[in-house]
Image (cartoon, rainbow, N blue to C red; front, top):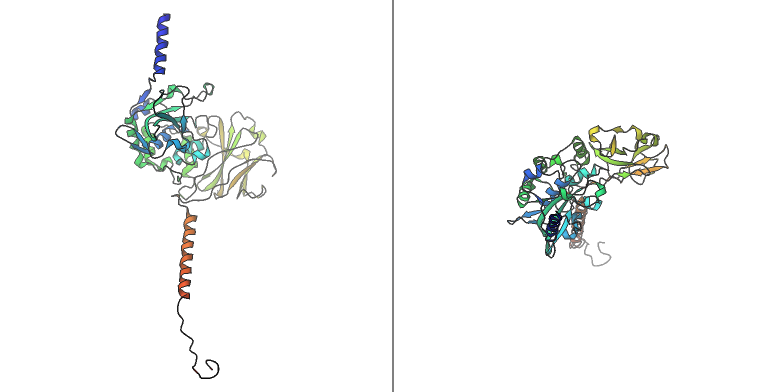
Amino acid sequence: MGGEKGLLIGFILFLTLSGIYTFDILENMQDLRDRTDFGKAFPRHGLKILLWLICQGEIDQNGVLQLNFNPAKNVFGIHRYLDREGVFPVLDNLPKKYYTVGSIGPLNVREHFPDYVTEDYCNSWGHSLRNVDRIVIRVQDDNPSRVDEVYVTQHFRDKNLGSHYDPGNTFKISSNLLREIQKFCPHIYQTSNQNHKKDQNDSNNPGLVEFLNEVGYRSSKNKGQQSKSSNSQHGHQSGSKKRDCDTVLVKGYDAGLQLYEKDSYACLRLYIKKSFFNWKKAFRYSWVALYTSAEVSNQEYQKYKWSTDFEKSSEEDHLEDYDVYEYQSKIAIAPGLQARMMLHNSYTDEIARTEPWPELLSTSGINWSFWILLLFGLLAIFVIKILRDASRIVRPAPPFVDVSEGRPGL
């Protein structure tokens, strides 16, 4: 019996050292739908980041994904993955590296992605699943844009197991499935650079909607409500700059404050941690107000609302650890608008302040100020040229009277 156990351990060790791993391989869309929960429901973003990544390149006849950017350049938050836990096949001396894709926590990463990738993250503050999904790619050393293996995985949901990737929820994507997914790309509104200024939410993105429906994405009422407040109502169609979605912490309390837009009006959202049982007592005299800019004093508010008078959203809209309370004002959203929260009935005990609402940009991402300055410059050059040409005109001599004596003309 002991000898058989030793043989088994030796065989497992041999498989590990030789780099032979048995992964579940997702061969087609049906496998992606039926055999994994990867990115399947709000607020997880795995399926959306997978679609985004595959749409950033072309798949050749060998099933290799040739990206249109270099993942080794640390773009889109992509970084080298050393796999110290041994989740993926050992590379040994192979001229290849692993990179991980999908961490959208930092602001300077989120701003590079289209809205449909980040919208659920933006509207699920405090949710433990909003940033767990990852994609691991294997690339060639001499050509990092050439991806020959793609895996989907996630961090352990049980935080006691650490922040490593969960081998039980790791799957390899076959080249056939890569091709099936890429068929949705012609109908995806996105670019691979920073100019993500178009409205790219689910409802206005037919390729995305079709893909999510086919793989069984479970869209909840919560998700739909959040999408509307996040994007389709955030003014992208009317020329609003893509803004960050971070909720600011309320100092000293398990709560958060968020400024968002709905139907072109400024709206406020309070996140209250469910363990914060006495929040109404703590915020009995607390109030939240809207200000035209960050420069005005706390006394110069436009509209205020008592914190305890915010309306609680429906049960379906609650997050895992937080209850959500909202207030919809009748003040039009505008650049520079800001929300501030006071603890007491005074102006000196501010406990939260949002970032000012950003300046407007065109929907297509055109920098209108540049073009206006250019137009004025060309106009100035044109006017100067006219004036110079006019100065060169030879004027006829004045019609003085020709006299032999005296002054001219007399």
